[in-house]
Image (cartoon, rainbow, N blue to C red; front, side):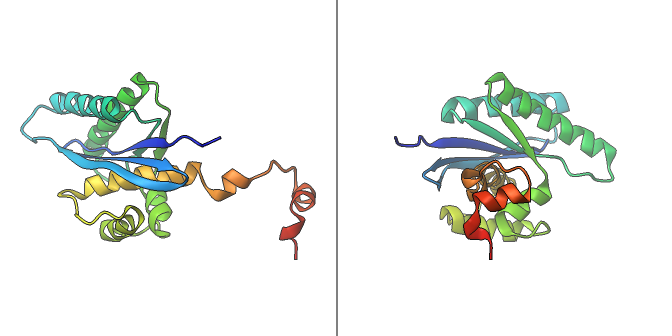
Length: 186
């Protein structure tokens, strides 16, 4: 029986630039379907921008029919107003996904960077370089929010499809683990 492909929509929320990345995974091979960003005018009312974010996520869901939705969690900063606005942007993106009955998973920026580069403190440039190798994309996006969203989608794939999870056996303590995995004991 052939395992069906899985489509993941990753979002890097923002009130001025929202990044998105859509990947399709088939037999553990990651294929980039689309990556981009929604640039919102700072002159628009905040609520109008939230409406545009919701609409854009709905359109991406309709176009690509993803099976799963992953989003970057807001990092904790010093500016409370910025955090509040970012949380709202994240909320409307999640609401659009939930309206489409998609399972939603949230990842911290550190977890995403660690998943892609092996270093939770990597900068955007290092993340982009690793993404280029993973999905063989050459053109750097206009806004790195798009590559951040792609990283969210790939991180989600890694977190939900790791070899450890796929091959794991339920164990009850060390004795049970050793009994079920004698080849791993030296």
